[in-house]
Length: 280
Image 1 (cartoon, rainbow, N blue to C red):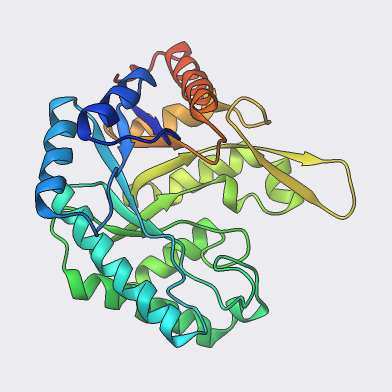
Image 2 (tube, helix red, strand yellow):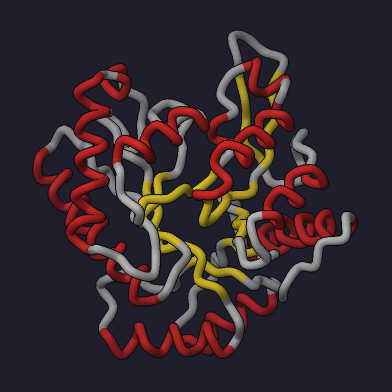
């Protein structure tokens, strides 16, 4: 399998970027540039990634394609299309975004309107528009699940795939984001297995995090780094490996370079303890 994550250090050229990735023992990487980069720069980074056997697993969007502000929405949609085109050019496993939100206080925030029929119809149309504008041949557009907006369950994700109806639409799996209630937390390892069982054929990239629930009212469920929570990574990593030896798992939401090193090392150690060969 392949493990990657953030770097949290500035780099100024492909050689410096590769040196950091190798120092962290990554074999999968987040795309080091965005769609504003010129053709020469794209070619240089792609060449460096291939030479170092670094799989570009994700090109991120992280913009609100369902904003209630028309300009914000249009700009986000344009950027999503440009990022998907970049992902196709770079041969990335996927281009990933959240579906969007009608929140007026945060681009990825909670809103009651996120669960209306009108919102869902707009979400389906938006994904179709992004994919149809680019028609990717080497990558996929994908949505990261969120705790408070669809898809917030494996079943909802599968329904979204069927409703979008595009072969270039796939799954970016973040199982921790969907552990959003006490029942799923109490059955967390079974729930993660269910995610893989239901969505496995569509999964192109995975976020590896951990979770714990605080003994406090009303319900407080916290994300944390792998090994600091209650998930069984010796159960999870064989599920990743079954998807293919080049399926990337990315640790994320960590504060600095050394913490990324620690998180990646933990995941690597758990994988190797159950006989999984980790590239890099």
